[in-house]
Amino acid sequence: MTDSADPVPVNPASLPAPRGYSHGTLSGNTLYLGGQTALDTDMRIVPGGIVAQFRQAFTNVLTTLSAVGGRPEDLVSITIYLTDIPDYQAHGAEIGEVWRELAGPVYPAMAGIGTAALWQPEAMIEILGVAVVPEARLVRPS
Image (cartoon, rainbow, N blue to C red; front, side, top):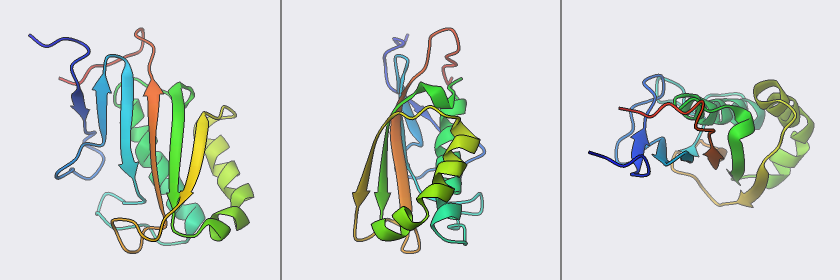
């Protein structure tokens, strides 16, 4: 028998099947969201620049969150890794619009970190986070 606090991988079927990692790990009612780049279901980074990549990467995060009954307001921390901080800043208003469209007006603790490269060479952004899902909504993966 497993304890509800035992870590359980969360890998939504609608995201590319992970190899060597999990999209998320649920421990108790805390979901640790693995880094998501802008991979689509065909395992390709979406074209269209930083705004399109932000939309896809954040949608991937929210897909994993939703798989355990979570909602955007359950996010408590987000870390965004960027290969081009000035490009992200230049498109900040558009990215903010995408955030509000997908997550509403609530913002968790956040950090933006510049990096020289990400796993996929064409990736410009990777988003990871932590969410605390209320027990009343929590769906534990089997």
